[in-house]
Length: 320
Image (tube, rainbow, N blue to C red; front, side, top):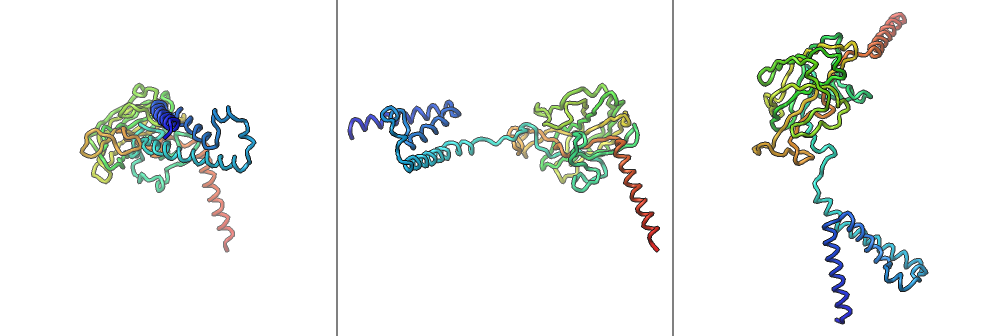
């Protein structure tokens, strides 16, 4: 091997070593630059060649096309060799990482908890307090109803807190709660002073994921633990009485959250998109809002009922 060949090989090895070292420190800059170098070399462009000759652009078109194809192939090979393995080895983190596994449901007592079955579940709606929620319509300013909170996860959930949110705390007089099925009863009356303005914090310190109603006034009510789905204590039932200005537009919304574990591993990461997340909560599509029907909705219902009656009368008159 000639001295020139040996020198060229050493330079090549040195360049390769420098590229690897630089890519380790700053991959976002060095790897794309490497793409450019490889593609340029495949096409036949290099600073030395440009300096020696300006006739490269006068080569036949088929040669330019062949080198362009080689450049594309080289780029694809480098991408497969560098970028794909890097993507495969990176942990998948969901956009709402830290927001917990969504396996709790908060729904009115007497219903199934299945949005596809329960007639009071409302899907798409421009009002975030109404959208994707079970809607309890009340008739006056004193409302009494039952709520179920169910754990649909396959592991125990701990320190569950019911989040009681209101759209306007000035319209609220009090919220009274009593557990009627579940852990030891914990009767409590929450005055307006128990409703600070803000966004609830989950068990590991993360904020509730984007919900649409928060930040707002909310209070907390401890529910204790919930067993895994299918167990005797996977559901807690709460009796709730709200005294407030529903006729003036008060809305009361209920969420729940706590923390959970992997079996036999103490307070360990759960199987969710975020491997460091121990939170458990209801999804934004499995909660409950209490309201008084709006004037427009009542009028529409009355109009529809009147139309049905009128059609029935007309049919009777037409019959022989």
